[in-house]
Length: 360
Image (cartoon, rainbow, N blue to C red; front, side, top):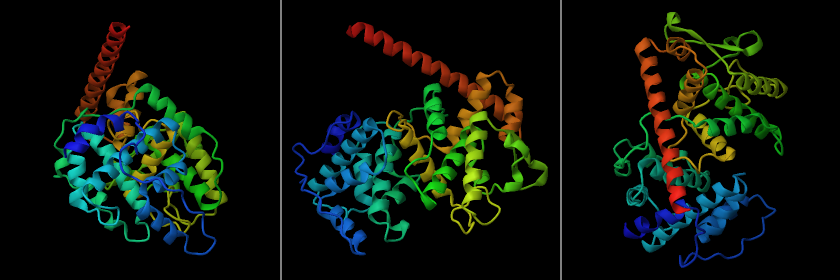
């Protein structure tokens, strides 16, 4: 693993890959007019995965800084594969696990590498069943060796600047999309909004129905397995606006069924994995994924919903009610975790400031 371990820092810093990597960067072929577009694209990935990645990256609408980091991470992975005489066609679960486990970085950073590989292989192997993606098996394996690294934080939150940046992206105009792509973008933004601005869990959001939206959509009713455990949660103003835009788009698209967040026009329910991919894509598009060591999960957004309420002076017991905690102690535990996290953030800023003054 020495090669991957010694160069991960450069990749994390956004170094352009390719120099000395032995990865050819031939010109891409022009797009075919016939129906074999996917076959041609797959051939491009197998022939020159670095160039194919650049083409894929250009279509993801990432910020330049994020794209630079992802390009460097992918370049490092390709170099590692080439040294072991493997390709994207022959790479397997063991190879990916060995690569990620060999990176001398924190577990959240390893997860970022794995998430990128998972997304790319999803694209490359999209003609096959999603279960054939070896990176997904590694990501879902709770005992995988790559997890044997120090965690960065036990309870994650978005920082105030990250929250502001994400809200700005969720609230920005949807442009350049049409048809199903357009309504899915509105849907995904609203899904993230109810996590960040309503504190819902993934399982709660994907079964939410239109009857759960109260008049004016300032409040949501969240059904529990037991009717006695149903609750109401207050939506943040930005979430009201984003959800309202989605409901308008949903009506215009004439989507079937009662679900607020259907997976398809037929109204079928969304799978949790689809919700997670939607969050990843929007976090990336907002430009905050590359700067985070930990993945921004639905739980991170839910925690951040609580943190914003704590910051506004809302009592922990009320926050716990809106989150659906059965016991007040859970809300107080989250409140303590938020205060601890805030103290660590301040301490980190002080350390960076002192370091900068010494360098000057």
